[in-house]
Image (cartoon, rainbow over all chains, first blue to last red; front, side, top):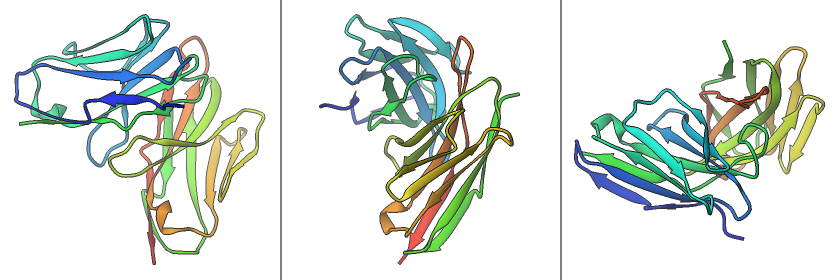
Length: 114
Length: 113
């Protein structure tokens, strides 16, 4: 069975640009969560989507947005990129709500903003 | 305020030795507690997930304990291997309608030959 997949693997963008990151959950999983992990720190929660609705939002500016599609895949969008947005972006899927059910993480997308 | 604190921040041990990592939490209401292993630059991998009624749970050489009364958990690694070098993160799920996940900062473990 395929695990959680993310694309692209690596990405280099310039300050002020926009980026879209994609995540496909494990088949049958209905919840997707997004995390930002800066080098040397733990993952910081950005969004959780369950059954295509936003169910949680971390302390991130409005430049960050996300959505979940009918097939439960998800996109994370970041506008007006800043140097500080450089990080590993992790997607995790779970059968039901992330806090109730076990989460499975994808390999991440490494975003570098120059 | 919901918090998860881990100790030590980092740990270096020799291959073959055992070690124990600690996690203290102040999360209410409590739903479950998870331990993850994260290799540098990769996504975390779940080691165990424990609910209120579970005291001990093993996954190979990894054994997690949970004391819900003192709000403490530990992760014991037996006969460490070089591949155990990673960050170990404790995550506590708060119950209620939102099931918020509270992440610890992690313990960075280095195994030396």
